[in-house]
Length: 427
Image (tube, rainbow, N blue to C red; front, side):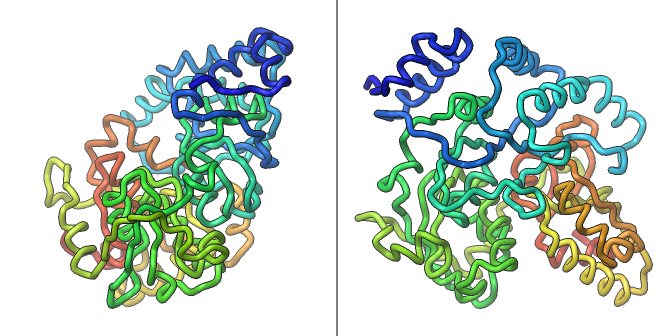
């Protein structure tokens, strides 16, 4: 079905703003028509967020495209944040791993960041998958239309903030921002935001956020779930604790499935406003119990060469940790070490967070306390670190279901991670 364009959009397509803008408009029109969109709607958020943050040598088509855009004098209509950087010298890596990182993988990082700055990067610290945190400064308002691609950010913006965004691909996020329009389909529509699954939480304790999100994501895939009973465990206010829980929960639904929006009864904005009218006719049902979560966890594959290997590295923060998480984990690590009679963590451990969050953390007494435990803080993307073929061979542990899904890292619950890094113990 051919998309209906207004006069301004048609003029851009016809070349009124130059050949490059015409190509950008044509790409968005073709993208929208593929998904049955009838029109383009304005992007209304103050800032954009780009998923492509890494200067991989093999991404030359991206750099060429960016160069064409910049050479044509085209700039994004919005300033933007971008996903985390892939490199940090403070994160443990041996000589050969560093050689691969710097000579064979992220050889274009500085060049690409220069392109991002010219195009409209918010600031030098705007590198985080959790761009919506106050310390980063890219938090959309309810009802705003976005042009984002980062899956964990999209699901958070849609669900917790009530903004509207499809799960776009990389570069499409940039094109929507450049031209100021995105195709209207899917999660941008009222109908597309209705839930086709009702998920009933019937656990006897607070479910692990990453594990619950994984279970729901694998069950509903790209559909929209309406979750009932979770407010019993995380409350009915979107305070810092609930938002942190939903950050990790949503990232797991998006990576272990393809969820772009979820509703939590009595908690998330649309669920509070519209209630069960959000549930589509004929919605399927999924009941989550303690046994179901244990089944899901036990079925995760372990792809280490030696399943009994001693972990060589622990990553926490995929998506990036919040300021409160860093503080809470400082308390947990200290208590765990004290109980075990240890002074420092037994496994090299990296907590990742946005640069802005880390700067605020450094202003608190928690920073020195955490450093004393041996834990390293970093702004990198653990996924990008694990993309190194030499790092893939390492036995790495994490409580992130996103990191587990996309890499060779092995999943453990938060309590299990704490046990291993402070007290040791068998897998």
